[in-house]
Length: 175
Length: 149
Image 1 (cartoon, one colour):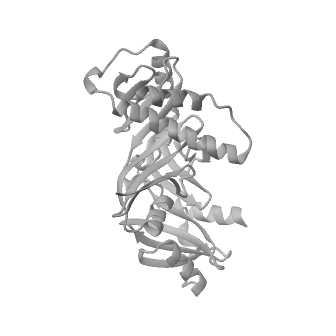
Image 2 (spheres, each protein chain N blue to C red):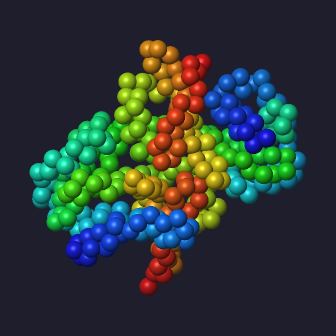
Image 3 (cartoon, helix red, strand yellow):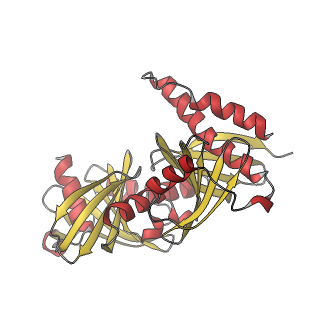
């Protein structure tokens, strides 16, 4: 599972930037998937290897990006490093390649931490659903929010990259 | 026109002499319908007008939060402002604020949400004075106003 996720990740990271709008949308989706997949790879990992050693390239990037981070701990899979730390008392996860490239950050949030347009959109368009997962993500080239909502019939994951509106990322009917 | 409306909205949000250009006034049906469409569960709605540009402002409670929304007389929804805390900022904005203005105290933060974008106006106080920083949702910071009152 982790190997497969890592392979997809590497392909996506190497995709060049395109000017075509349709291609941009595809790349945005791929970029978002990257963060999700890396996060999933670590979710499957056992927790006994917390506070693993981190190489100097990764550490240098981390210190540059998050100079004021507190309570930092490290985990790693075969291909990626994950730092768990606090900024302004909020728990944040950041992901890195062994070469020190930052892949992105994931920050679990409450619905009241969403921009107000995203909250009103949920009330208007997805009334009757409940929230099962919500996080903010950021990469050097894209950032936004992912939310998973459910009702009695289906589970949906929505994404927002403009802070104003949601689009459907995936939809699954319940059995 | 849009620039003036934007400026009024932000000035109102930043509470800069808001009372000097706000007057109680109920809007027409078109504006009220536009409001109800955007904010289905709003409570305690108070309407005012801003300046002479036909901009209506509604202050109300939504999801236990105080919001202010702006509409043209034609019912076009311009955006919403609300006061937020640092924990409601995107984490990339918090990170950039700490990196660039770590020693400053955050006095107030307003979120300004439009249909096509999002920005935060953060009033910082240092020993040298205060300033308003504009932050985009992706963590880009710029100085919006120096020596803010």
